[in-house]
Length: 560
Ligand SMILES: [Zn+2]
Image (cartoon, rainbow, N blue to C red; front, side, top):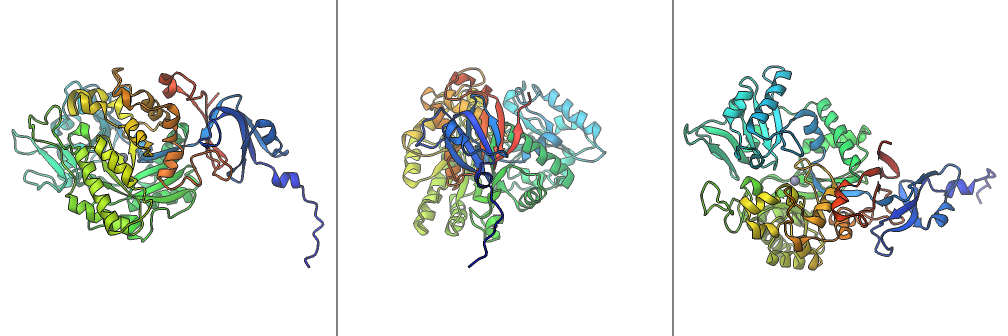
């Protein structure tokens, strides 16, 4: 028998909560609790210890317990961003020229863009790259892409490379084209286009899809210090919007390494799920190459799906549609965009990843790309049947009703970029899709009617990370001009909140640990100034985030 230890144990201290969030309006996302009831949450060792009525939870307090009185403010599970490109927004905001149009940036005409690049060039050592992002041809007065000639007015000495807001097109000046080895007669890569100036027969500087990679590969990588500055900034941006988990929709090996170093160095207080990217059939994603499956990792950082792209962006005319664009591209009524590879090649990539036990997530905006994706998922399941694979479709913008039927049958789950209705809704109706197809873009209500679980994302840095803005867009579908884009595709605020909390956790196989405020789950929380279920639906986007908590630790607190 073990000798008795006579050291007195203070039972109350050992069993007590580390922190109690009290006097809160709780939207727990736990179906057994009604939303908006008043109560408290106790946290211990980074997990939720108890949820309930304030008086009852107060009994878990001891002298050392931190008591956070929320004064009637609303407490939710931390927002789960299901698709973005963390930490690129921070890296870009720290090092790229902001070429967005209002409200995200200052550019209203090509001259504004040239001037902004010229200023940046003047600050940099001669010969170094000038990088810009976020320009939108359809929002600038000229309504066209800038060309190499425009960028040469900013600088002829520096290579200049700028990316379209969609991330699917870019423009290089002569120096940058030269550095990348692009000249007249350079063969266009599969899945990409090198646009040619019809007057000169030379590349005009605009590169689409995979052709962008030729220039991107020539841009020197950021130094470790520059990248870390961007990482810190991205952490602040995400935490300030209430995000506690970010899913990175396509990491390469270098990014995975840098993130792990960031984590080890204590600079990454958020949780990450890293999808690993697969661009060509022959080369496995870094996760596949290492023999590591979806789900591998720990509470801070895990491997997510294998990420594949099958088309581009509808507002860049590179989305792959089953019937032509509303305003035909360069007058060509037969032009429907293009897939990034053949259906057969896609099937091979999906079958490999699926066979090994991975989740697969494929970017598909146009309905023809979605047809390819559904075909590839069906073929993979036929060859290697597997229950509950939760394969995803990213953006899924033009999913037709028959495609939503198939998705429901197959258990395929979409992540919608619903804020498109605000940012591009007017132009989708007028230019790209036409009014009928635009009214059905991001068809949330149609998916919901079929019982399909879906998520909402901002695709940061394409648009600013802001899950509440996605919720606002899902509930209102208001465009920039104030029109409602597809009234009958609106959903209620509770369902929209599910899509950035519990359904997002589920979509990424994390529902046992995240997405709701329930005992045993990770203590990832966000406190809001107002209750999104009670405010005027049009005011949801203006609700302030007061505090963001990851694993019981406060990572953001509003000033004042
Ligand atoms: Zn994306």
